[in-house]
Amino acid sequence: MNEDALREHIALIGKSLYDRGLAHGSAGNISVRLADGWLMTPTNSCLGRLDPARISRLDAGGKLLSGDPPSKETFLHIAMYQERAAAGAVVHLHSAHAVAVSCIADVDPGDVFPPITAYAIMQVGKLALVPYFPPGDQTLADAVRKLARRHHAVLLANHGPVVAGATLEAAVNAIEELEQTAKLVLLLRGQPVRALTAEQVAELNRRFPG
Image (cartoon, rainbow, N blue to C red; front, side, top):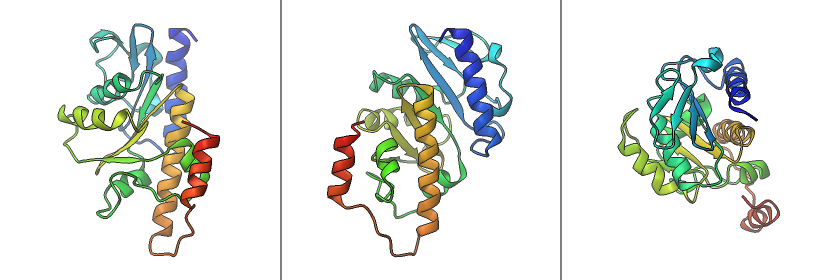
């Protein structure tokens, strides 16, 4: 897919996320890796109303080459790319159920979700919780970088998920599964849960390696 087609594809994906309530206002951002840099959704842009021609074009060092100024959270994406050589895209959302789970005090920071569905294991894997930092705080990149090599999906405390994938479709599918799992976790709170066993999780990881 050439750059023009990628720009159109980012706008199409952004509108889909927005139309289904997974993005709102100017929250959330999408990036795609190029051979010599990245495409990044602009700062203060609405994912539902992206102009493909105005999507930010960044060089390999993160410098703006063309388009509008990039998201102030570009550093989150770059941290993921730097630690995950196979990542072709990164998506960050403020989706409601994932953000709600990120605010719960007693979640396991090493693995936020209990193993309740096979697809959460297959597409999200172990979801690590990143400590809270103010939006735009550059030290958040260091916190993400420490986890990104072992986790392609992380949850920013009191903020939202960041997910890397080999392709934009893979990243979007994973973050949608993450949001759905967060919804299930909230629905099940206070209920006795039949979680997958360690053996069942190991079998899924064997059959569907990340």
